[in-house]
Image (tube, rainbow, N blue to C red; front, side, top):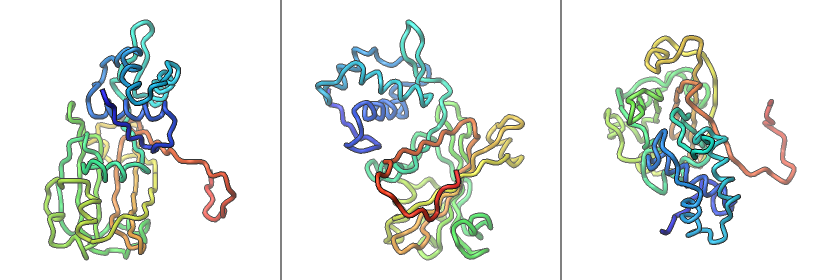
Length: 270
């Protein structure tokens, strides 16, 4: 069987990472469901040797260890490796756009989308400040709720805020799920490509309505992401925000480590 390897890290990624990426994708797409046992090592070796003829058992085990470290699978002594029943949602910001350009799907196609509101309104103050927009500027707002397809449980509360110059009077003002990733729709309508994105991560206590909708236990927090995407000319194409229960989300940021000295301007505080 021919296995297509489309690693999040690209062709330069080590074998074990590329195999882990493929298995992670299988789990995300429901090929192996929660609580289900993964194929035995011998079966996995046979599968992936179609792509890596010299694949060793130790490399195969290294791929499984990556998934175990991420909480996606768990080992049961003497029985095998199983998909975790309550694994966290994962966000890999650097790879989301590229993946959607390849498959044309929604960025979170594994979840069920609802759009309870789409229409015009002022950009919220906290988002205007982060994105450098005018306070009270009118935009097209698309609010979304994302649900687990199997359990029906709400997983994310979010919204996108889009400039009127291209979004006004379009299908983006209709409370319907778009046919492909929102950023692809924005690129089509605006004639501009997403060129730069910046994520602002915050942990806070939930508002009462958020706690009730997301079924958050008392004393637990939420992760609040503000995402600002710009075109090559630095104009804002989209500002979005997403809210998840802190115990249901895992942020994974993979990147190459620079080997050369760089300008220290904007150096991280931690």
